[in-house]
Length: 186
Image 1 (cartoon, one colour):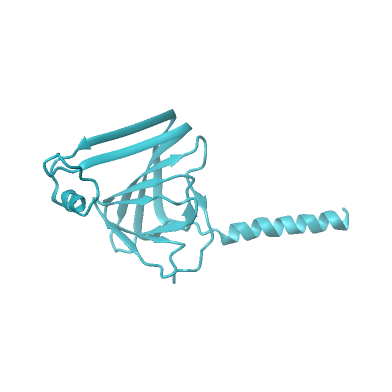
Image 2 (cartoon, rainbow, N blue to C red):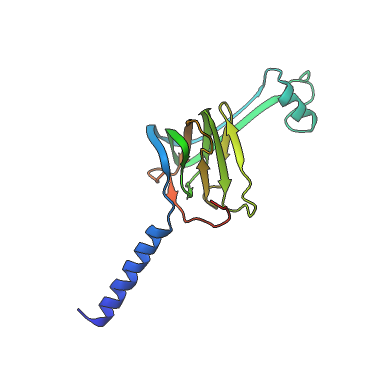
C-alpha cells in the first residue's frame, strides 16, 4: 500500500472515530416508535372561537389572539403546511431517574408532551444553561432544532414518560446525535 493511501486511510479513521467520540448518546431511557406516516402536500388552517379560558383570555387582553366582536372569547388559530410531503412519527420515551437523551438535533419541529413525572430540557445555544422544566400535563416544543442541539434529562428520583411527535422530511432520521456544546456543567 502506498504511503499516500495509508495517510488518507489514517486521516479517515481518525475523523470517523472523532465523530463517534464527540457524540453524546443517551442513557437510562427506553423508547418505542408507536407509528410513522407520510402525508402528501397539504395546507391546513383552523380559526375558531375557543371556550372561555381565564389564562387564554388574559393573553388576549395583552393583545395576543382576541378579536373584537367575540364577547371576550379567545380566537384559537393553528396553521400547518407541508410541501411536497411530510412524515409524522410518534414515540413513547421513558426516562429512568437520572436518564438523559444525549445532545441531539432533529430535522423538523418536535412536540413533547410530558405525561408522567418531570423533565428538564437544555438548549446548546443558551450560554447560561438555564433549565426548562416541564411537569406531567405540560408540553415543550423543539422548534428550531435543526439550528442547535438540545438535551432532555430526568433530574428527579421518579421515572418520567414523554409522548413525542416528530415532523420530518420524508424518510429522514428523527434524531441526529450531536457533540456536547460545553455550555452546561454536566
